[in-house]
Length: 110
Image 1 (spheres, one colour):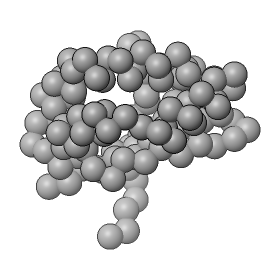
Image 2 (cartoon, rainbow, N blue to C red):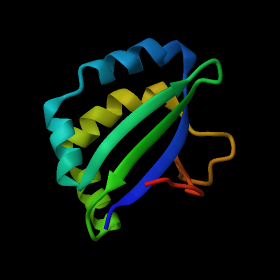
Image 3 (cartoon, one colour):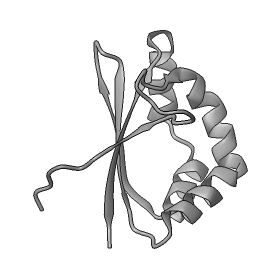
Image 4 (cartoon, helix red, strand yellow):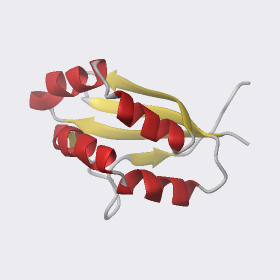
């Protein structure tokens, strides 16, 4: 069964162009790592002037926690996040240790 997931985070204004450039030329190995973690239809949207990033993906696996753990342990993921994380800032309302804030789905039209 596919699980749709939405999340939000702030992007630092001074890092916006860098963040856009990174995603304009994504690394094929990073894309493959996401696919291997059962992530499909991954999109990131930008809302200006609020400087919010909205991420959406569909998870098609059976053990999300395990897939995310494996994804997070990959060297390609660590290298990618070393570049993208400095471009982002958690929401002021984020909980302790939360980076991207997960959103609750309240409506879906198939």
